[in-house]
Image 1 (cartoon, rainbow, N blue to C red):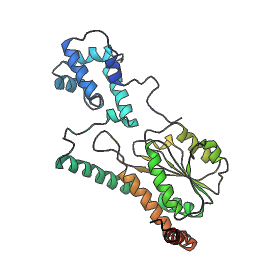
Image 2: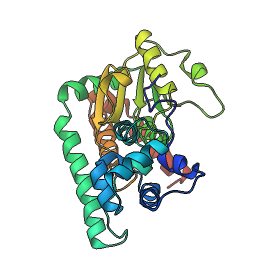
Image 3: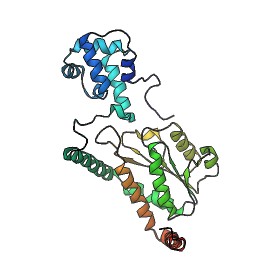
Image 4: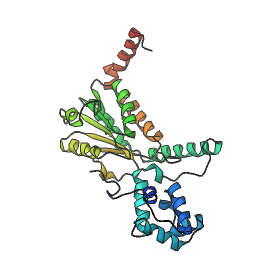
Length: 286
């Protein structure tokens, strides 16, 4: 299964809400602070939290233990794992009004940084064989759950313009096992595996590799490589300017892949894109 926060993980805001006894004033201030900004537990020390809440380090220690943690270090490890896993409440956000030029600039800066870091790591040794395999694959399955589903849907729709046998998995009303039953080494899977993944994503990748099916995985840069098995892997920076991940870099990589595919002679010879455009005119669809 895909590693994720421990099964006993319980968000700190839920722990605070579950408290029944009255809190001393020094701990009440900490409760109010961490309930409103749980990400601070991942990014600040006990001393820093005490300063922000106008409390004391001793009060931080007492409060953390009152919440059921063994220590502040244990609480911080759990918060950082939730942050790595992509829990929105644990993503640090700049203290900026949402609709200002300064906030717009920070958002743009983050997306540009994500694009730059992603493409700095992108290697021709990954892109070229992956695109070549897309070109010769008998059938292509594109897999994506949760936030990754929108990316998978986009990529599948672009591939349909170039290839005959492209399917978005799982199909509505179907199980993924039914959809994958006929896939083999002559086919290919593209798996969008961005955080926070459902466990079946890693199982699909593992099955495909055992069956000899080539697998291209796109995931977030925070995910350790071994979490989702792959023939080729492209890691995309997804850290957003606030609580939610940004997929600007991922979309750009998908666009790059389909553009590279469209330029291959064997794809151009297939003439599928031109035929699709001709049919648009026939049906007056656009």
